[in-house]
Image 1 (cartoon, helix red, strand yellow):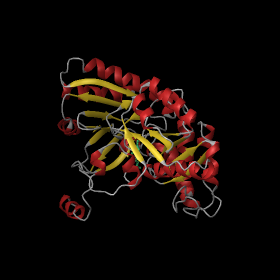
Image 2 (cartoon, helix red, strand yellow):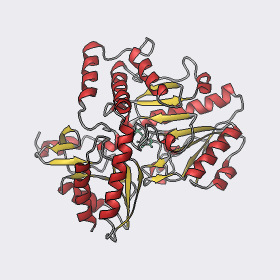
Image 3 (tube, rainbow, N blue to C red):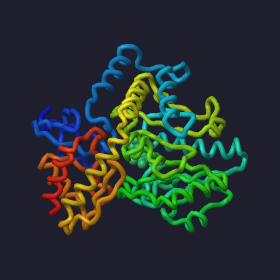
Image 4 (tube, rainbow, N blue to C red):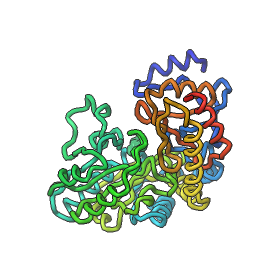
Length: 393
Ligand SMILES: *Cc1c(COP(=O)(O)O)cnc(C)c1O
């Protein structure tokens, strides 16, 4: 299609995205190409989705093999790939049982439902309230946007579901004041990503985990952006010396194939029974073939450790090369989830970087967010840092 035809076709879409004027048509490793043949270094990775780079051969092989065999069967039948993908996730985490779905919002929706059902039907205590945090992001369904601590995500969608309270992060007194006999769960990201790349305080999260344990409150960790090696551990909770009762995955779980998962501890197994939750497409043979190959690759090739090392290098280079910039204020992050806090809006920097062949995104108005894939090389990091240093000088 010509640019004009594409523009006309795009008029048939609802305007839910402020899209960049770039049409990407091909991807390989850390590189993507647009329809005019321009090449870019991709530090967006589909927002932490293509953690293994674009078109990773091993995942493609698993996908194509499954495409030749069987695409879809109902969850009313046995699905070996699904069981094996679940075992890989539980063998490599603190979790014991997995529910597969198709997106992050759905994984969080499942976590909220499981937490309530466990409290109400297993513990029989009638608890329903979910405590969440300012600046968090948990998704776009009615329940998950209610859980999200950002007003702009909720605007115009009233009435919102009941049973959610949002408080300040890293404030133990606020949490103690919010907890009551109604509290079913506390739900949070360990590095707030959309909210501006803010890792949670170590001491605080330990205290949160202790309080939850003491009070019979479930701890739900949203690992949708932080999971699958992104932060330098397979799951971000490993950095903090805590174990969530439930954690949620999506983004990097399928290397670009849409899939989500909720992983829960053994005691929560009783919270769901046949018929209490479900999804037509959750964990199809294709999706879970991709999950298996993705987890095997990330674990087998020690990619979390690589992400930790490359992330440290990226942050050190940024701190060094941006030291003289009055616009760049702070570099922070965990592994390859990296933010540059700036003195003002970063939209123009993102556009200028695109013209120089580098794709980056924002996390809130004033933070540049860098999300290279886990296989990014030091040379690629140097290339990105040089472009950013020039633009932020
Ligand atoms: C992206 C994201 C979600 C929502 O995932 P979708 O697949 O877009 O529904 C939820 N939580 C966090 C932390 C995310 O980064």
